[in-house]
Each structure stands twice: as structure tokens, then as C-alpha cells.
Image (cartoon, rainbow over all chains, first blue to last red; front, side, top):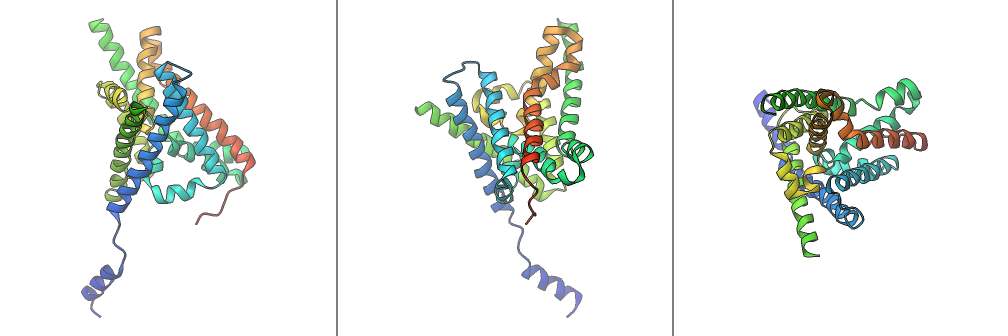
Length: 147
Length: 123
């Protein structure tokens, strides 16, 4: 079998990368998480009329749910199907924190859990804060100029 | 009751759209999931800074605040509020103040969960 034939044979046999299916699954599960959040929001708004506060409470609730599901090992099963569907909502951030903590327990609590808990959330916090500071500098200068 | 269902539907569509964009970026480019998260947070700060994200939050509710871009929205909003209240010091204090609840909850619960559960073999 020549090289070219072999390449054709392999590409015919290998599974096509299911980009469309991945996108559909990400849409459905990601959308479901956000609309679950909205449903929790509607429920909380019965008790609290401050919109921003209630939205923060919703994020906290979803974080708690995601971390508990990570602990009992269900989250990974959902994430494998959902891809970006569970990654992009705040659940992905919570899962990244919890799974690094659980996985590095054997390396000790200070340099294992303590350090590695930030392995994915650290970059997010760092670059988020940094871009916030850049925005703050620009916003402050603008507010000095235009009062 | 109807407006609650409509709110949930809009949150579904907008939140789902954020996830689809990320999924296509993961499949089509070399962006790893961690880079996507960083990119989304910075994107959220940027969109809030130019004034595009707050209207989206008004329309989509949790469809805009639950994705990680909403985390960036919380950072930028925190910075803006802090500067309005305390002046230049707010540049440094605002970002983490806006996200303090989420970060602290995730870290503390993560630690508690790591005390209770053992790591499972990855399939």
C-alpha cells in the first residue's frame, strides 16, 4: 500500500470529528444550565428584589451545585458529553476549582490542594483582575477629564 | 407565569450561544479549555467596559451573568462602582470585591469537598 493510499484508507476509517454534534450538545446543556439559573433567579426574586444581589446568589447556588456534583463524581460524566456546555457557565469554574482540589489531595494539603486549587482558576482570576485594573485606569482618567 | 417562562427561554438561547461559540473555538482552533475561560473573562470585562454587556444582562438575565463573561461583567462593574465611591483606590479594590463571593465560595467549598471525597479514576 502506497503512502497516499494509506492516508486515504485511514481518513476513510477514522471517525469524523463531530463538530456539529459537539456544538449542539454544548448549546443544549449550556442553555439548560443558564435557564436553570434563571429559574432559580425567579424563585429568589420572590424574597429579594435587588436584581444584582439575586444574580450573585444564583451564581453562588450554581457554584455550590457544581462543586457537590464534582465531589460525588457526577460532574465529569456530564462534562464529557457537554464540552463547553458545562465549561463556559460558572459551573466550569467551580468544577475546575473542586476537581483540582480533590485530585491533588494525595500531594498534601499545603502544596497539593492549597497550590493546585488555583491551577485553572488562578489564570482566570489573574487575567480577569488585570483586565479589570486596565479598565479601571481608563475609566478613572476619563472620569477626571469629563467629570 | 408566562414572563418567567419567556425569561428562562431567553436565558437558554443567550447562554447556549455563549457555549456554542466556545465549543466551536475549542474544536476549530488550538484554544484549550483553560484559555477559553481566560478569554471569556477578559471578553466580559471588555464588553462591560464599552457598555455592551449591561444591556445584554438586562435582556438575558442569567443567560448573560452565568457564563464566565458574566464573571468579567462582575469584575468590571465592581471596579466602576468602587471608583465612583472611593476614587482611584477603587481601581485596585473593585475587581476582586465584585467577584469575592464567587471566588470565596468556590475555594472554600472546593477545600471541603476535597476533605470528604477521594479522587476517582478518570475514564
